[in-house]
Image (tube, rainbow, N blue to C red):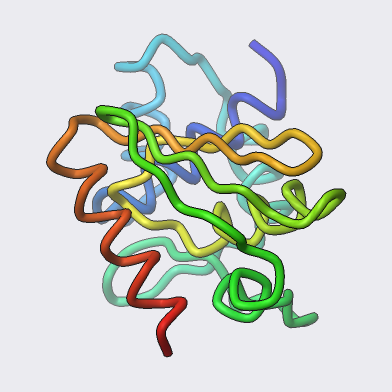
Length: 144
């Protein structure tokens, strides 16, 4: 198990439910097949910028503001299409990656993941109806 994968699973867990202790986090990871010592969890949590709140562990706000997805989308997005549970975004050449990263940083729960090329982004959703809702959300975002 790589450090990057383990940290990704930690983020996935704290974004999807409330986790209040490192012990609880360790158990949740173990249920997913990931063994991690308390020392490793502590280091991962520090590197990820997690803080303990009354709602459980959460990510700290980033110090350097990223370009917001809405800003990048309004500037570079040229087309939005749906193909069953997938959304295809066409961007200006060379801008798909930055738009996809901004979308990933938005952490839309209805988006399972993105893949970016030079001028095309593939958004994967769990099902067709969710993809339709994402497409509508994207189009409304562009109208603003």
